[in-house]
Image 1 (cartoon, rainbow, N blue to C red):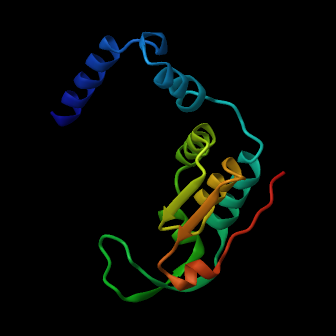
Image 2 (cartoon, rainbow, N blue to C red):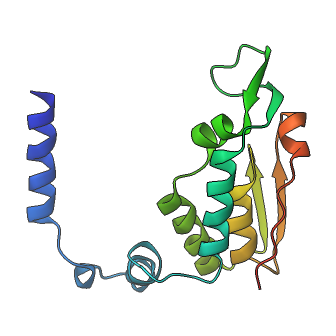
Length: 151
């Protein structure tokens, strides 16, 4: 019954929603067209997604201290591939973050919970002249320091 309700709500939304041309705010119109609906393949997507693939296959293990919402405070041994599978932003969201940062021209950026740093690399490539502060609570994950140079 819940699925039927959700489908009904979605259909109502699609019927009532218009196109980007129904948006009156120039800022929101720009945001929709140049960020959210943008399908362009930016220069850094390929190398960063290649790095994602490598992380998802990395069988090295490290001792992890979990500081998340359901943290037990215990150290556990995890494969980097498992950490990558559970903590990396999905490709479409990492690329959306890239476009949002690129669009915003932010000068200062703070990221909390860096994990393996792939999203940080997306941010850094979108904001090459910005100051980015990123924090990771687990020292072993922080030591991994991903580095990739994209021209």
